[in-house]
Amino acid sequence: MNSSDLDVLENALAWLGEGVRVALVTVVETWGSAPRPVGSLLAVAEDGRFVGSVSGGCIEEHLVARLDREFPDKPYTTSYGVSADEARRFGLPCGGTMVVAIEPILDAEGIARSVEEIRNRRRVVRTLDMASGVATVTEAGRDDKFGFDGKVLRNVVGPNWRLVIVGAGHLARYLARMALMLDFSVYVTDPRLEYRAQWDVPDAVLLEGMPDDAILALGIDACTAVVTTAHDPKVDDMALLEALKSDAFYIGALGSSRTSAKRRIRLELFDLTPAQIDRLRAPAGIPIGSHTPAEIALSMLAEVVARRSALIAAGKAPAEKSAAAGCVS
Image (cartoon, rainbow, N blue to C red; front, top):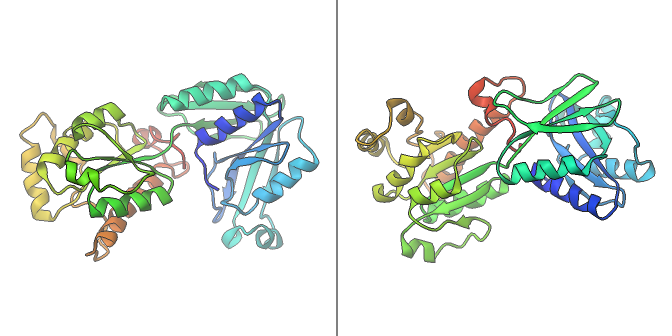
């Protein structure tokens, strides 16, 4: 089960409020093809409830059973998949190995502050002293990133990845469903009543208002991608005028090379700099020979995911990437 940092911390806070002890498990080191990146979270209540994922389902059951037998009174680390036999036992692929830190949550107030900040789409750094078990929470700076030296664990936690789709047509339906399966929160904006009336992806939020107003109201941050699919300049261009000024980590537009060239000419007439216009990926998507709406959606989302993956790649974060380093991976 994959859950956002917010889901994990909200559940942990709720269980603590019930008087139940809760342990927080964090991936701190990986080698090989480990299924989850460093910083991934799992919360385990002493009664067996859990939320989050540190291995994509391979070792969660073992961790829950382990904590049921002996709940920790101080933080410690443990490894999985060191030997070939363990890799087979725990289902870690291709010899993957991971080390996790297991800590009893001692400070509900710190978890509560983290939850509040993430709800407001702000990132925080949670710093854990492994010797004392004391954790502190501070606002994350642009260049803050995950760190663990065996003594201190610094984890940047933050809001989930979002995809804003402009246009609510056939292609957008495929794009929304695929994105939801890949753990994006999906938002759709389209002022055309006939398209709004037939929208049938309930887990994707249909925004009110014109596309530019909807994007401004939602607030586009470095954890958000924007893709236009309406194929109507009156709809797509309005959204792009705001998206290109935002911190969105990806901005793409449907259309042929000829259509994209005409779009650029239109955008140059507005208050956008050449650098802002250059951020637009158009035609959006990677070349897979796509023709059907589903294939085009796959192509577009593959490019979004590739960009997201680059942003969360460990240890390769220039300033541009570190802005999104605390988004949920």
